[in-house]
Image: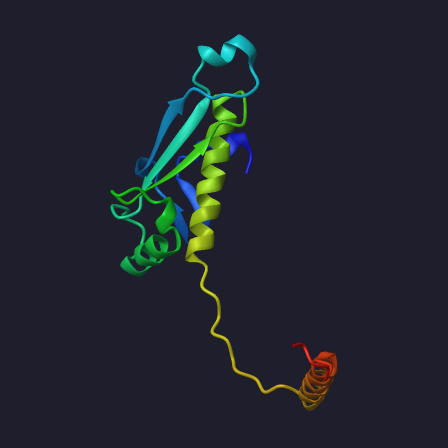
Length: 151
């Protein structure tokens, strides 16, 4: 994603079939630290991007629950997801970075892993495990005490 598509009128594409409408994203300007010299004290080039997960019209209840569970530590007590970007000197680049990060966070939180299928260990792996276990047992047994009186 480049800075040119940061203001996509359709909204923020999270993954195929899911686009967050532009009106659900609230961007606030921040003063950004870092490079910029004295300019950093007077220009608000940083961005704080807010997305209210609970109030979203495009997320299903299951998706909202999944995001709330997977991103619980990042949500405010009002259910807003905040993304801060202050690494660039230009407001537009910070906005694009915040939007990219928000899309990546949401896509990762909504990703469902396929259920694990139980498999049996191979005969060779069982044999190796038992052999290693026997050798480790012998090594520990041999390590142990001498029969001298300690008293």
